[in-house]
Image (cartoon, rainbow, N blue to C red; front, side, top):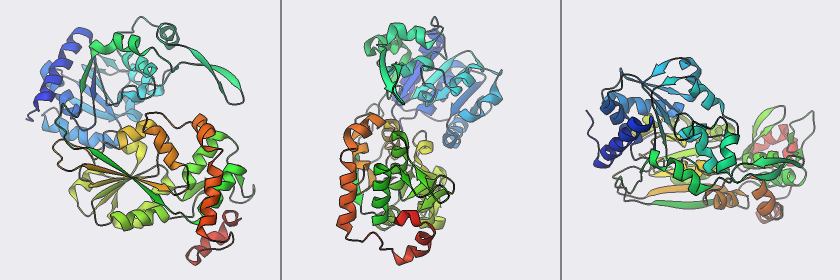
Length: 446
């Protein structure tokens, strides 16, 4: 059987004591500290006969491996959030909710929360490295999976009347709605602190640091022209052709993120690829190292997978086992519970607008006992908005429409225009290697 590190054994005993007293506990563990093995020790120590672990799909195999090594294959069932309806009405001695911030939506309960509520359980163990990455209001529905400490509140709104400074904000076309994000930190934490056990990477003996590197890649002139048209007009092409419509601020944010990755989703014809500069730069720069790449959009992933051919894999287990493989995975699916510890370099092809993707994704290459620093590389389009997004999310804020309006709108068009002029390419000049593609998509050379 597995022998735990002293910090894991202590955390397991602390969690066990809380579960005995309150039937709900929160294991707050920074990435790579071994939360799963700690949870398995809790199951064993409490003598639980049946336990259900709910996690993200890509983390299932890793958790099952830990479960089996602990001799709990006949006790612990592992599933993902999407499969929860299959367990409705079933009973378990302990429900273990991995990455439990995934059920933290408010003010209305999420589907995941409702699905979890359909499962009978004697106790609940919540686990996450970031319990409330955006607002302490995110803790309500997580702890509401148990009876303590907020079982007396029938709804989030009733709870918010006591724990939140309810403000108002404008959305859409000027509609005023309540904003519940400003929870009273001290009051919220004061109510739940006795239910939480925290394990940091320092507790686990992590001695290496994460070093972050910014790479600015000169994209093709076409990319800057498309970005400028989206920001200026919000529409490219014609209704009957391959058109891109970004008629709201939110759509502009989404389309710009796609464009600076070298592809964009059109209205009627799906994704169209027009710039492989980032993929070519990554392969040329990091091809001699063990590296893992995270991307946002499927078309962006397709560009990367085509560049690497048979060497590409989206299996973290295969990547860690085979030095010839390069991991290429979608950032939201890979930011939590995925072990990429074999990577010398973790590469983000662009950046997600969510602070959670930044905070958790950057930890994928860390592990206890690593002797060298974890190197994180951010591949940004030179002259694009990605560096501004990076500055925002690394301060633990999501990059939202308000950021776009406040920090970007007045400057981004000028930067994109400068990128086009600086490239010294006329608006009608076309790379001969892409002549066929461009001729079929004339809107991108307009």
